[in-house]
Image 1 (cartoon, rainbow, N blue to C red):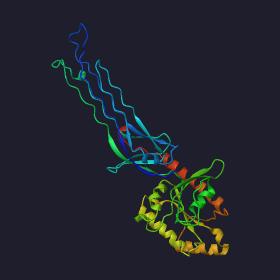
Image 2 (cartoon, rainbow, N blue to C red; image 1 turned 180 degrees about the vertical axis):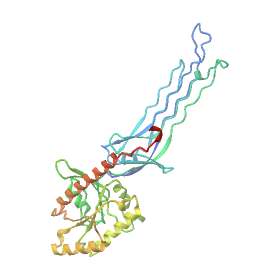
Image 3 (cartoon, helix red, strand yellow; image 1 turned 90 degrees about the horizontal axis):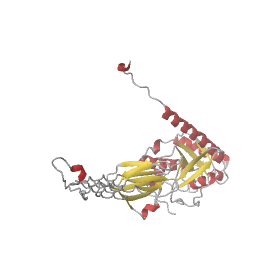
Image 4 (cartoon, rainbow, N blue to C red; image 1 turned 60 degrees about the vertical axis):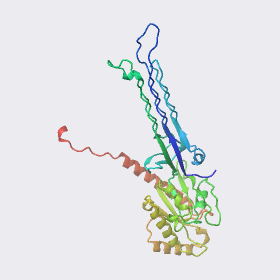
Length: 356
């Protein structure tokens, strides 16, 4: 199935039902008076997160979603039935914007989350509401109001703990296939990855995390070159980035320049990705001996003035993979604990002399 992470749909909430003009007509009751009932409210439109969906491809074929209209009122003060609320299923992690105004509406982040995107119209009033001492037989009622109509831009942003960055053929797909059950296409030519992949990495009996692989980013990606720039948004919710660089490129290119190229494109993309915690991972270390590897590593760190974590791995021989996975698991636990501590911080109530 083709991976689709963006879609534009139209949603229409139900119109409110109209009020009724009616008069009581019964034998032996010549002056029954007005008895027109109210209409029913129109149905709302909600987006509901469903963990069973992984793509927005269904919206390529069904773009129009309409909730039920409220029923009109009728005589004998009978109120019309409310329109059925429409629930539209979307993948977890879907972000919603108004396509016309670019207003951010909301996002659904967990299975079962609901987001109201179009509110149903209000019901109309029957003529029973307009009777008075001077108007015994009102022949007026109100129409229901129209439901909201919107064009929505749906954007799926994958939920992952760790994101992979790197030029094409840097070894991202090889890494995610080596540490998880994900099986992306792996080949000895660039751009083998055409859409994002997610993999669950096990670091023990009760320890696991999700890693995301996106198509390689190339120079000029922010201006539309290559595929990676349109998928960088999938790294916006990650807590940590692994920047993969080929330590032994067969074309003799500079690993330092490869790192700088990615950093430039990420900074131009924005979304604070450039400020995200980032680890440097040297790939394909099995292609050179230990002495040459140490020399290239030292030269690279010196050229980049790098002071963060650095790991050397080989996805083929599994060199360094266990250590990298355990370090990632520990760091993610630390970040999770920090986030929970920050959420539990209570702000002291300001002093109020009137309470003392």
